[in-house]
Structure formats: structure tokens, C-alpha cells
Length: 594
Image (tube, rainbow, N blue to C red; front, side, top):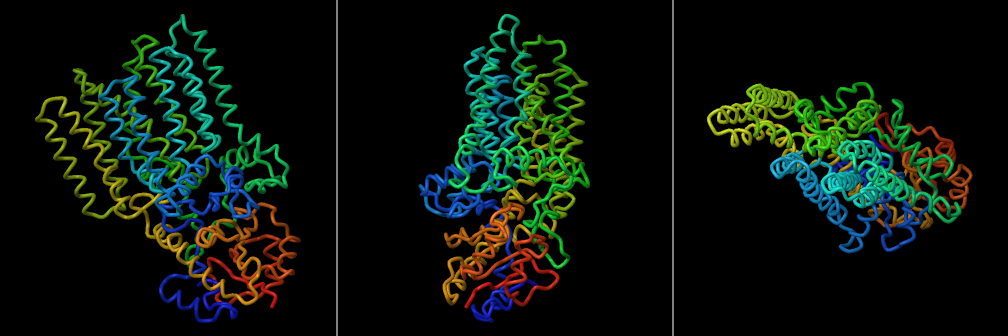
């Protein structure tokens, strides 16, 4: 049951009920649009033709409040929309291109240090990762982040091979641009890059390498903080209020809201956590990997199905290769590659196990390192004559296949049976062919489960918020609750256009998460009280009261659990519409003064 299901008298009492009969309740909205492949579609500037608004990354057409992220990835999406028009595919096209480029650049980076065979295996493993496939089907900034981080790793590899430290300036530029896409997460691999570069530096070049790293650090820091610093210098009245901040501070948004607070087990999306069913469960409980089970962040549950398939195999490769590298010179390229990709993997594993809240699509950043380590391991397995190493490789593949079968527990029975048959056939075939072909067959056996999961992501129409073989409750959120948002918004917009009196703002919402489908569908200003989580102090209670008393507001949508002075004022001074039962996702109030 959703408030407004019977409709406000001013809009005609039967219209909302008609939509409910067709399963499209116009107030049953999430914070994503069209379908789960269009994640965050509403959290971007609508007027892409307005350069100032785009530069300042306003959430709404009037740029009264910002989005709660930095705008690097959004600028590219807006450019695509300007060129091709406001189509869903135009929002998604940049991510598809970025994902393809990531695989190509990753191939080059691995080839520099480990050769073409390892690079080819790496590219294949990365391209088939379920987390990557799901991520590239949406418009989340992590796609651009991963591309830029891989570019940075490629430039570091170029320095290790050639000794030209000028590449470190380009490496720092990539890190700085990655910061514009995903903020502090871009800095996580900086110590790893520095360690790999110093480890591989010949003694005679060590001082030059340290100087180059200093330029790398200066470049990365300057580019990272450039936009934040410039926009912070603008008078507050000349830019949108900074969402995710209590003091209109970009530095607070970046380093507190989007960084330090994420390590807190109690971090919440506030009033953006819409109720998604009669049991009162919010979408966060269904989709987000919370602090209750750190194991499921990576190795079980949603996190395991997203990216855990090959983590144990990658760790085995890292350990075995590190043991084999102990007798090599410090400056050996393979040793540097292990430091680079092994450090990338270990740093992110530690972070994702430590923080309390993990969105599954975060885990796609693990894919390049996992793929590179498996590529290096496959090359070593192919070249070795050591029976112990080959026996360990066979055991690792068999364990990986068994682990993949376990992670596929929620898949259809025929899928799990097929995985068993395929794995057994491939491993038996590998016993009867030459060693080079056996390596390829064992790789296919290890990749069978994650590749099947990646195919299921596409077949089921899933996107970044989804995980392979997810539960019915999760599908209800992404494929039902969120997928119908834009359609429902268009239907309600058509009814609001007939509101008597034509108020300045036919619709106002509590949280920008709720406003986004209506802004996308209509292109009109929809004031969003409190920003994405409802915690932003704009507009104030006095400001809300002033708009309503002046007759500027028609309908207000709020979430039932909202505990906010502004919502309290609306409840006291506007008329609640019928239909707000215990399972209401959104409550509606008519505030029109006529």
C-alpha cells in the first residue's frame, strides 16, 4: 500500500488507482531510474546545455543543491547526452567504452612486465568478471575510476621498463583524474605504485626515481584537489549547496561523508532508504553488504557472487609466484609486477573487509588485479616442469571450480549440474593433451562458474546494483521497485500538469533520491528537501513554510520514516492523501492553497 493510491481530489480520485491495477504505482519509487542498468541516472545535471550548472554539478535544473559525489564521470555522461540526445543508451555509452578501454589498457600494462601470454589471459579474465559486466551496464563512476587506475598502473609499468621518470607525471595525472571520479578511493593504490617503482629501481637510478615520485605526488595531489579548491573559493550564493555536508563544504563532502564516515558500521543512507515491501525492509538491507558479515563482503553471499569467484585462485598465484621470486634480483620485472598487482589486490581486500558498508559494484575494482595475478600464474604454470607446482595448479583449479559451484547455490539446478559436467570434462581432457593446451583447458574450467554468472547478469537484464543469482527480494527492488520509477514518474507528471492553480512547484520531495525520476522525466525543477539522504539543511523549515504559504507547492512526497523538522511541518500544515498503510514506500501530502 502506498500513500496517494486513491489519488488527491484535485487530480481525480480514480487515476492513481488505475495505475495500481496495472502494477505501476506512481509513488512507488526508488532512487534509480528506468531499470537497474541505469544506476544513478537521476543524480546528474539535467540541463547539459548549461555549462555553469554542469561545471558546478547541480542536482536539479535550478542547481539549488549538488549531487553527493564529484562530477568527473558525470561530465562525460553529460557530453554524451549533448551529442546524442537524452536517451538511456547515451548515458550508458561512456561506461561501455570505458570498460572496453580498461581491458585494452590492462592488456598493455601486463604485457609490459609479464609478456603477451599473461596479458592475453589477464584481458580474458577481466572481461568475463561478473562485477565488471554488471558495472559496465550502468552509469556509475566506478567504471571511469577503474580505467584511470589501470592507466596509472600502465604508466608505472612503463617507468619500470624504460626508466623514463617523465611517465610518472602522467601517472600522477591519471590518479588525480580518478579522484574526480571516485574521490579518496583513487588514492588507495598510490603506496602500491610507489613501492613497485622503488623496488624495481636499479641502485644507480634510485635518486632519480625518488625525484620522479615527488613529481608524481605533486601532480596527483594538485589535480585531485583542483576542482574542489576552485569551487570552494566561489561565494556560497553562486554555487549549489554541497550535498552530504552540514556546512556547505566540499572538503567535508569528500573527506567525511564519502570517506571517513564509510568506515563506520552505522553509516546509513538516511531517508533515501526506501521501504520496499510490506515487511518494512528498506532497499539498503536487500542490496548493500553490511557490517553483520564481513565474510560476505568478498567470499560469500552477494559479495562472493559479485567478485569472489577467483579471489582464492589469485591469492594462490600471488603466494606461489612470490615464493618463486625470492631468488630473483630485486629489479626483476616479474617481481615488480607482483608488487604492483598483488599490492593492488591486498590493499583493496583489506579495505573491503574493514569498512562496514560495501555496495557490490565497489568490488569491480578488484578485477584488474585478480586477472593480472591469474594471468601471471597461468604463464608460470605453462612454463614450469616442476611436478609440485603443476600438482598445486591442478588442485587450485579443482578447488576454484568447487568454490564456484558453492557460490552458485542460488542458481537454477541445471546450471549447477552443468558446471559440474563441464569442469569434469575439461579437467579429464587436460590430462590427455600437451601441456600448453592443458593450461588453456584448466583456465576454462576455473572460469566456467564466473563466466556463467556474467552471462546470467546479461540474460536477466541486471545492472550495477544487482548480483548474479540474487534473491527474489533483491530483484523486487532492482527489477520492480526501481525499474518502474521513470515510467511511474511520467504518469504522475501528466496528472500534476492538470493541477488547478498551476503552482510554481507542482511537486516537492523529501530527498533528491525521490526527486530524480521526476526531474529526468519532465526536465522541470523539483525542489528536493534535504539532499540525497535528507540530512542536508536546505531548504530550511522556514524556507519550506514560505514556499507552501505562498502557494508555490502542489504535492509533497516524503518517506514514512522521515524524522525531520521540515517533514513534521508539512505533516502539520498539509493534507495527507489516503492510502498510507503500514507498507507505504512513500507518503503524499497536498499543500496547494486553493
